[in-house]
Length: 150
Image (cartoon, rainbow, N blue to C red; front, side):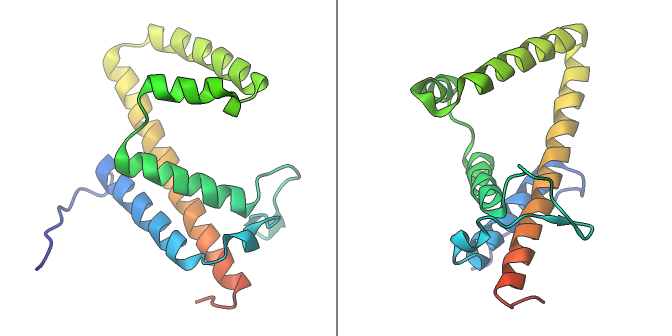
């Protein structure tokens, strides 16, 4: 049985989301031993990442978690807040998030709804595209480690 898939325009958010999910699924299938990614850093244009930058294992777990949200939707706001309140987020993160939220609300209060939509839409498009590239790089680096580089 052939499954019909809908083709969307190149810059459609659904296309970007589908591509992200597919690339991360591929990364999950290729990376059989995620622990090999610990303490490995991205090499950007032949230069090593800055000290304190997340290692590839952290990216691997983050990209997988985001894929679940992209595929299945976000937790309801109340569940997310209770998760944060359970101590999974540090005090500094909570303060930074509050400050960021206050600043965002101030800026968004000045914009009309259409401008807000375009701002968030383009930001989401940009972030998903960036995360897709990171997932491809994690996969490529893992393949190099395992000697499977194409």
